[in-house]
Length: 222
Image 1 (tube, rainbow, N blue to C red):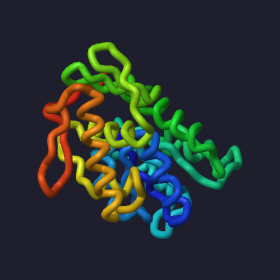
Image 2: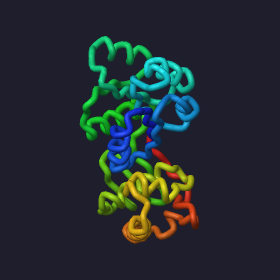
Image 3: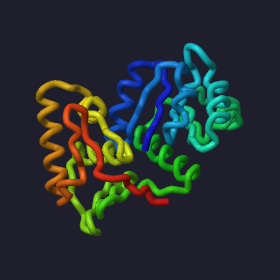
Image 4: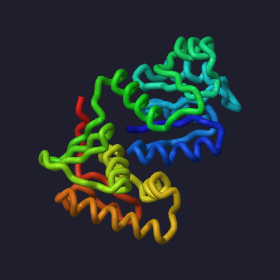
């Protein structure tokens, strides 16, 4: 699932982005409203802070809803009064989460609002391989495949690219939060392990010098 995080607080964003990636979500972060309207049509869920440096979050939410009626919007803010929640929901938000929050609960809310918006289950399939993002389970031809946490994160990011190239830098940033020589080697090992465990050597293709992509377009179950 593709998530846009609009959050001006760097420490909050630096902690949240890798936490969401560990749950198999592909996250892009913006520190302000600039560029958000251009990206809203390219993502599934928006996590929107209300206190932004350039535009009021409620105003931005209304504009996002005008641009895309399909995207799910969750306001994530320290403003926890009932009035604030009512205003946020009336502006077009699907949900309202007050800081501080539990990451697991936030992830559950992300999946819930996405399901309500699309009627889709967070499951993708290609060539007999099935990835359940909610349950963090992988099967091949109905047989469970046991993956490590990082192996699942890597596979989830590649599946969520939907056949497009998932760049090495993206995987390294979201799974390892670093792009040193050791992490680069570790990524290569994880890709090799995935190909072996899935029994589908051609499922994950290497795009030399760029990253990885699926051999075809995955089907997301609805």
